[in-house]
Image (tube, rainbow, N blue to C red; front, side, top):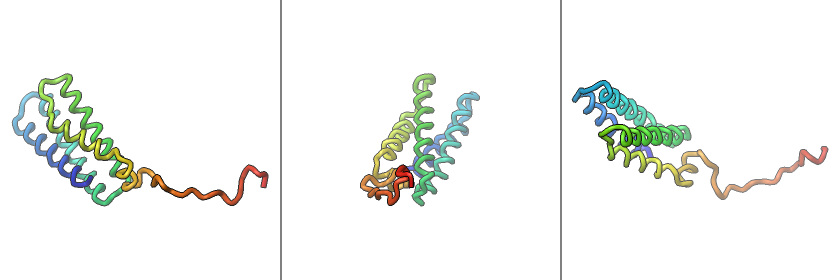
Length: 126
């Protein structure tokens, strides 16, 4: 997951820098700035994911959903959707979804966790 986040961050930073260097309208420049910001955030998330921090799973999933929403809005309302970024964001969401990944990051408990019976019943009146 960390390597995927790092790759996504590098891709978004490179794409954003390319857009800003090319120049253009204010809308195009803001689009490039957003790509750079998403890429920088992905690099920070990648560090947490490489260390298997539980916050990294939540942050990466949120980042991927925001990035995917951004690409879908570009697809429906602008002429230049970035299908590579859309595919990478979709891969990130699908990679983070399995239960094993969520357990590894500590987001969910293990499915075969043994629940112990309470030694004292608080409803017995005692």
